[in-house]
Amino acid sequence: MNKSRPNSDPTILGTRPIGRLLMQYSVPAVIASVVTSLYNIIDSIFIGRGVGAMAIAGLAITFPLMNLVIAFCMLIAVGGATITSIFMGQKNIARASEVVNNVLALCLVHSLIFGGITLVFLDPILVFFGATPEMLPYAREFMQVILAGTPIAYVFIGLNNLMRATGYPAKAMVSALLSVAVNVALCPLFIFVFGWGIRGAALATVCGQLAAFTWVLCHFMSKGSYIHFRRERSWISPPIVKRIYTIGMSPFLMNVCACIVVVFLNRALLDCSGEDGNLAVGAYGILNRTTMFFVMIVFGVTQGMQPILGFNYGANNWTRVKQTLRKGVIIGLSITTVGWTVTELFPDTISEFFTVERELIDIARNGFRVYFICFPVVGCQIVITNFFQSIGKPKLSIFLSLTRQLIFLIPFLLILPPMFGIDGVWAGMAASDFLAFVVAVITLVIMMRRLNRKFMQAPSVISTTSEL
Image (cartoon, rainbow, N blue to C red; front, side, top):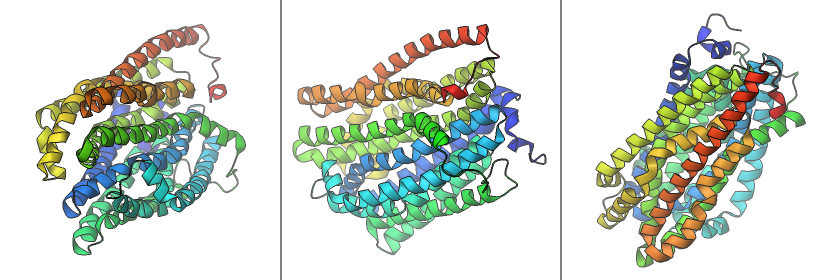
């Protein structure tokens, strides 16, 4: 343990006041999430103003594929981070180090397989996702570069989650800031000076990820880090791989569902908007970027909660687990309520950052008004879903993820757009958010009663490793 750096000692997760821990772990994660969201937004702004409105639509068409890219990465990153936190709560440092080795190996394997296969079949995939002949060239140019850089992105994201989980939230924030800073510096240079268009935006993104990749790799190669690579530990351990996949399945399915949903959304928008279909997809791109800005802030909070929840659940400290959940729900609700307020008051201002085309702005304005009506409760639903994931109950987390992004939304997208046109698309998204929130609250109430009884009856004999 590095005693000269007490803030890097993960044992404080079981002793320090919850409020201080949330500040220490969530604030860096939130800052990193905000900056990451901002650079996605800035990328879109540069693309929209430097390449054109059709490039925005082409970028929106890539969202499903981007969700798939992230899905195979988060399967490893979140599963590895959760297991590492629980092992450290049980003071099993050797096993925690072995998880780090396995995460690196799995990130490389996943990226090479997924990136390679997708590059080969890129055009058919984009057409399946709804790319029109006008959008396809832009979507292709962007994704060719992004897919080529997947090994860099996967290792960066996977190890960065572990960096936070092992007691280095500030360093995890720095890696995200480094990625963003390089990207934002290079993006306008590649687009406006070199004239590389949307391909330049993608290349700037990969360059930013390369800088962060170097940072996190150096951290885990250093023996001064609390948890680091150990050559003598297994690099592919079947029991650990199984546990990583089991817990990481929730965020994996969440991103896969997001991919499926965006396909349905794009097709619904194209079918019900007639000649304005391309602009409707572009409007969804604006809404999506705005939504993800606030959702990513909530994810930053849940990333900060994850090591606190995992450590204390592993240490059978149920009171601290409940305190962390309570504070997280309040923060999550507050963030998405702010998001709803901003989009209700300034929809045109938000759209004007991305485009100067009035027709596109008008479509986006109506989308903001309808879709965001239930947005305040989204923060609570996300926190509850990630709570079950963090304490090693992936089945519940998967179920709650599916309710918001698949079980409720797909039927709404099949029923409402034929009846109400584009307003039916926005209304279906809002209705699914509300129903998913209701189901999440009911599930939480039932499970908390069961867990309360379990911990009161035999708190000293509860085995968390069996639930992994």
